[in-house]
Image (cartoon, one colour):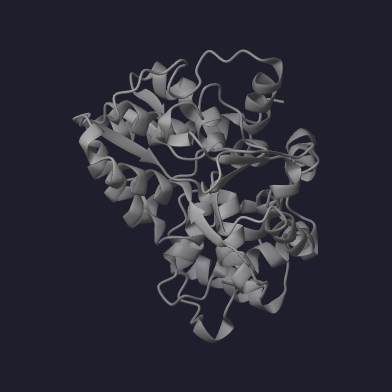
Length: 356
């Protein structure tokens, strides 16, 4: 992606459309002028790093990429010490390759295996699992106002994945898929294996096993991760997957182009109360449009919102659990990991909610 000045006409739509700020068109245009000029300006600290302004820009100028550059240059972006440490050290966990069956692909779960029972069942039988920091893309660095860790480490991450010898690798973490596709292309880093999103893998599995599907006949609200702003083409695959599962993705205000972030970068930056207000709007929007459940594709989105969704009467369901349910499988754990009281997980939840 990267910012393209030639495509920017300073219309202000990018920041005027932001759901987290309150700029009018002229104020938004002024912010853009200041960013281009390299001047200190309010949007640098008002931004919550959800990257939605790239989607709002109809010209394809990618204003968030310029905004992130200015955040990094100025050092003005603030977040909690605990969240920054989480982001800075996320790729320091030990790595391992858990072999599957010959001829089956590998799935990269990096460091986000944070929900019990999520990789059980026929969907994952035979897959090789790549686990640990060597395979974590560190795209999450954007949420603490910096891109340098990604630029410095991405080539080495791709090399580590390539050394596994797999010609196709499924990405479980949306951050990793975005980094190893969009960002790798932007940085002109060659990727010597096919990168496949786990949405595509789940869809292809259902297409190959349609006789096993038991349509769920459920209305769901979908929670889109911030990183999906880098890969908008995946939304069509997701809609196909929902159709195969027999669920209807309700039309609502805070979805697709106007999706609200789950809040994981918001709480540590703007405070738990600010974050909770936007989560409440998001959940109420789902309920008002008759959703019965809220479906999460990103594990951090699930950690951030599953309790609030359940308290509001929306069944929280992780995407792999939804597919397993459509295949008629019984789940050994809650479909979004509710009730997981491990200290490590509870601490992570408090960090991303801005409570710690």
